[in-house]
Amino acid sequence: MFTFSVLFGVMMPAHVVYVQAARQPYDVHKIIDAFRTPNDDLKILCAHRGLRWNGTAENSRDSYFRASEADIECIETDIHLSLDGQLPMTHDHGLGRTTDIGEMTGQAAYNPYTAEGFNPKVGGYNFTGLGGIEQLRLRDEQGRVRDEYVPTLPQMIESIFDSGMNVVLQLDFKDETAIEPAYWALKHLTNRAGVPANEWCIYKLQSVWYQTPEVFEALPWVQDAFRSGIKLAFIPVYDPEYVGIFDQMASAKLFSQTNYTISLEVELRNVGGPIQDILDYTRDKSSPIRTAGTFFAGGDFTFPNTDKLTFFDTANYSLPADLHVNNSLYTYVENKAPMLLDAQVGNSSSDGHDYRSDFNWIIEQGYQWIIADTADGWHSRLEKQGLRNVSRLIADGRRVVDGTLAKTWYKRSVWWSAFA
Image (cartoon, rainbow, N blue to C red; front, side, top):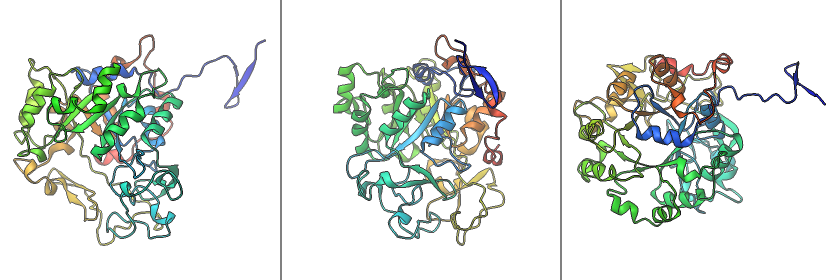
């Protein structure tokens, strides 16, 4: 019997399969391989805390889904450890800016511009039970409470499975103590394609924590991964802030010899500045590691709404009319007035300037992957330059989905225009 269904008032055959218009059928193993292998026509993009802004809370299920809808293949996320050993996905050490902890406990809501209000530490609260973090709703970038609750890492993996998203995660741990619990929590979880979560959740760890492969490989959870045949994906983070603490160049060379290190994050602030040698090492054709990534420091101010009840009160601080001054950029700094990146750079730059807010500078340095709050804007710009050949990431037997129709549905990123 031939049956019909109705979609938008149009009669269609019931057996027709509707394509998800903007979610690409990526293969997570191919995404991981693209982190390893430099490609002249592809820059990998990681949406910082998901594709947030415009009322979408950071590190939320919605922000992850929006990233997938925008063709973004990687999401950089934040993980803490709660008092009861759960893994809430929040960026700050305090709960005040990103949740409604103040309202829920009958105390003043926290204002990140003035430090007024209730902002308790994530690690001081249980996730489950009465008064637990799981009962807290998320705030968006302007302080408005959204109807979405704080997820844990396993819950987010399950959400990715349920929605069929084909993305990889960069796990940015805010607590070193959360790393091993995360591994065990993910061990028996997969994506819709059946790939173990511990193979597409990239362990992006501060290099100062584990300075050599010997130290890293001695960890019980790493030993278990080796015994279990899990193909770990590891990225050590090198930063000028660690200069003088240990030999980062020696560390990078050692990790580059391992099969689990897929790339390096090299947070160079200026050409010729501290850790330039590490980035140069990834450019050397004889190097066993040929890729590096960085964070696009594009700033995190948003256009304020007009509702005085929901917008964070900036008190005596006024948002600059022009966020750009002398090729630097004003950014949000918790509990302080907005500051230029250059005013924050200190000894991390040899010329007093932080160039990571410059799109062209990042491209000129040859970075293969970029973490950005405006990953959708980066996608559009890179696409025009022939640097987003996502067909390299598509699963075998599948085709690139034409997202043209989805792109006409709404204007993705008004915010990006301020930094284009």
